[in-house]
Figure 1 (cartoon, rainbow, N blue to C red):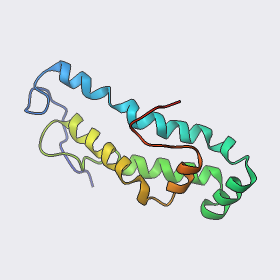
Figure 2 (cartoon, rainbow, N blue to C red):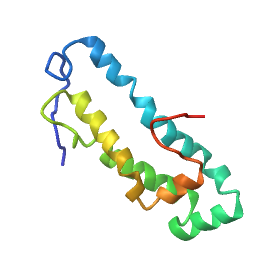
Figure 3 (cartoon, one colour):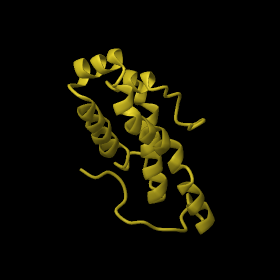
Figure 4 (cartoon, rainbow, N blue to C red):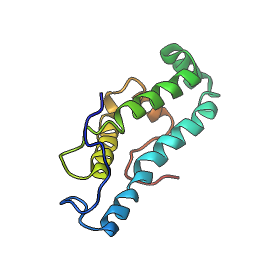
Length: 125
């Protein structure tokens, strides 16, 4: 079931004006870019026999790994679990940041590491 507020609003204690609201959106690439890079690079990563073998043994196929990551992110990254009664965008961003902080506990964490992933708050080359 949905957790959090059902409306988007401005002018509360977390988002006192539109500039802060817009600034919150600038955080989104910090967690989405590394995620998208991993998903885009997965087929090429699996061309390596050792990595491909690992992915097949652990997940069944690169596509199943990709779907596992996406399903988990969309289940938890926008669930509103970060909501503290403040703004909607703040709660959703916190939910996504919470998801990134739990990556090391996910079954696919080692696949991220094999891809060269170094974190969600750094260089996105």
